[in-house]
Every structure is written in structure tokens, then in C-alpha cells.
Length: 137
Image (cartoon, rainbow, N blue to C red; front, side, top):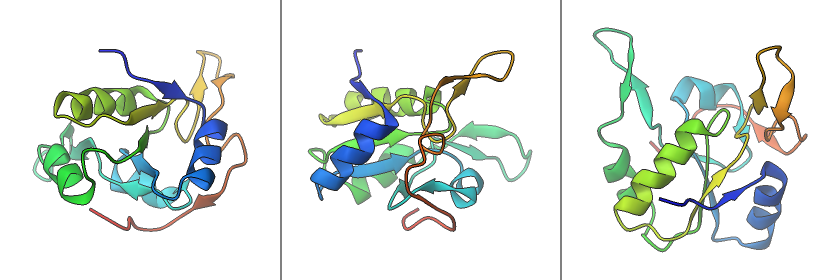
């Protein structure tokens, strides 16, 4: 399934130009609270299992997104580097969301084995960042 992709800089410009567009951050609540794009909404794709403290899929992901956003909403989906957000876009498209775009590089960017930035993330680009709890669950 082909998912449109954009850069953090282009996503920020789109968010400024379209007040109906939403940056949907699919990282864990702890990652989100440590720093996220200003105005982002958080619905984690992966959560920590309370019993095992191991990551597991968020079985409520689709239900929460459906409760918070109509299927025609323009969603710019990001995570830490772009992998989880790409998967989230695929899931959302499979349930009927039509305007979802993956933010390449996400919040923290993509690094090679030596730690060099390969794809700059939201934070690397110096775009507006907030900290603190999510506005939505």
C-alpha cells in the first residue's frame, strides 16, 4: 500500500497553512511527553504492557483515532524516525482514512550505524517543540 510521505519542514508548513490538518504523533506517551511537535496529538501505536513492561500493539489505536478524527481528516503521522508512523498510516488507510501522510524522519530523525543523521527529524530542523502530556489519549 503506497503511503504519501513528507518531510518535517513541509509538514510544519502544511500545518501552518491548513488549520484543519493535524500532526498525529504515534509514539508512546513517555516519548511524547519528553518532546513533540507543537500542537501535536498523541495516539500511541505501541504501548508498554503493564504486566510485562514489554512493548505491545495498542489494541485501541484505531478506535481512539476514529473517536478523535473523522475519516476525511488531514493527518500528518509521525513517530521517532518514521517506521511506526508508516505502519500507522497503513493501518489507518486500511480502515478508510483517505488523507494520511507519513512524516519521514519523524521527531528524532534517522541515523546510520555511526550515529550520523541520514534524515533530519522535526527536532533536528529546529521546528516548534512542546513538552508535557498529550492533549488526547
